[in-house]
Length: 278
Length: 278
Image 1: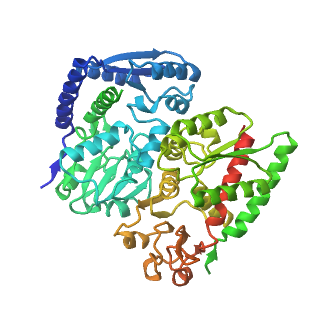
Image 2: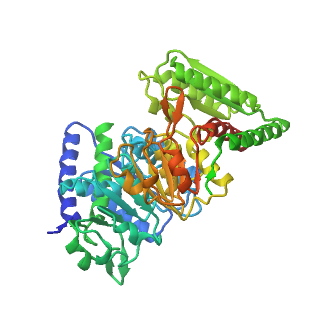
Image 3: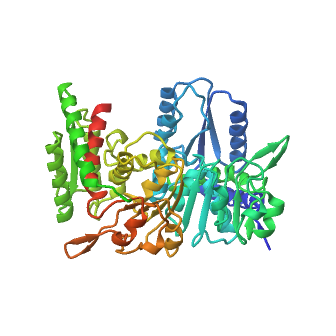
């Protein structure tokens, strides 16, 4: 019987845990603060950063939204350095993608590792590869948390990571270099995808192609983490053909309602962790 | 016909190229300087760092050996910060492993990325994962260089990285996340090694077990990079049973004489690159 990895329900539980941690922190006189930096005026980024603010405030986390309508790389870096140095601020994140006029890499690199609650800076990535303690990018943290909550041991398995975005596939593969697993990774568009999907005990996929994985392609009992977001009008589909594949899987994330609902929640939990460690 | 990837000969050629670059730099008034930090008095580390000094000086690179017989983490970090800030110093490296009394991670993390000629700091590793420009650890750089010099295209192949040390397997796998390859990685001691070795178009192995790979285990035409160093008395063997396997391979590194002779050479070349970029 396939287990549906319900990200919505799991997220709701974790939000309650986060709220309770925030209350405990406040009782100790620590007020968790998340600084969010938005550069430019991209409507998608603006909407998403506003949603983060709303969700943080609902969980009792104070937010500081720094909206730089126009900014040079130096100005953004200088703001981040100020936030790094401010002991009242626990988490610092930059809404990505940043506008093309600035050097996104340099900006993200400026965030102090202990405040990098989005887990996307190079030093955080390096710590992940090296197996050192660090924050994880929200998607990676969400996947590991879903497996944990459903008592699925990530180890002793052959993981196949299909799709290597810098926010998900790459750090996921990097994390797995430190687990007792075999991990096979390749970018979206790889023609040998079927050959490797067939071997997967755990498939973590983000190739942005509806129906990229069908029932004939998977091994019975596979755990599937589908990170695809393929829109047809207002309807969204994953990369895996859910109806056909799910009866063969031992566990699978639905799309929508799998990893997605956990993303902001993981950011909030990381902020609380940063406050606890401060 | 198998091609023997001759690290000794390749290294000798590159040393000549390095010398010529050093001469050009000196003619422009730039004197390349490598700072090497040795903490403690481990005989192996002392010998190796002295060899690096000797080889650097032979190539015309000035060295500064900082031998801290005893040091706290803070003292080592403070020395590194001084070297980072000194525009006359182009490369900074710490001989690893550092003694247990200091925090090796924290020390290496202090090296500025643009002077991290050993390529072992977390921020360098993060840049490797992200596909950003950075130095590479000597072993990884050596492997990519050997393939290049022998006109072996690393792309379009299934790489199997067996053994995940922090100086070789992990950064190798991280680099491959940015190439057009499929990469499968797992740690030494993994029981499914034969299953994956059989699939390898390129096998990069460092599991420290003589005879870990025998002729019956490989695919015809495989490229083998053997990083094993298994001593029997004064004789050293790789992880791959060379006599039996080499007739099946399209290319293979001998042990000794494969990747090993290139390691210090890559450090020297990185120092020249750092001087060129300074």
